[in-house]
Length: 96
Image 1 (cartoon, rainbow, N blue to C red):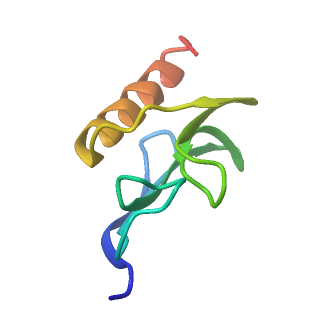
Image 2: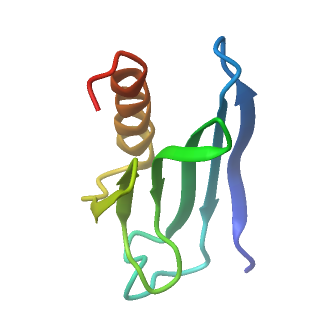
C-alpha cells in the first residue's frame, strides 16, 4: 500500500498570508513516525515560515515557532491541527 493523502489545503488568509496543511496516512509505522502519519502544517508570512509543524524524515514530530524548533508530542491529527491553528492565532495576536 502506498501512502494515502488524507488532507491537503492551501489557503490565503484575510491578511494575505499562506496556511498550508498536508497530511498522509502511511502504510506502516517507523521509528520517526510511530503513529503512521506524515504531515506538514505551515503558516507563511512575507515568504517566511513563522509557524510550522512537521515530521520530516529523521527528525520526528516537532514544531517551528519563528526561528525556534522544539519537539512536539503527537496525539492525533485532530489535536495536531488544533495546536497549529492555536499557534497561528497567537502569532497573529503578537503572543509568539
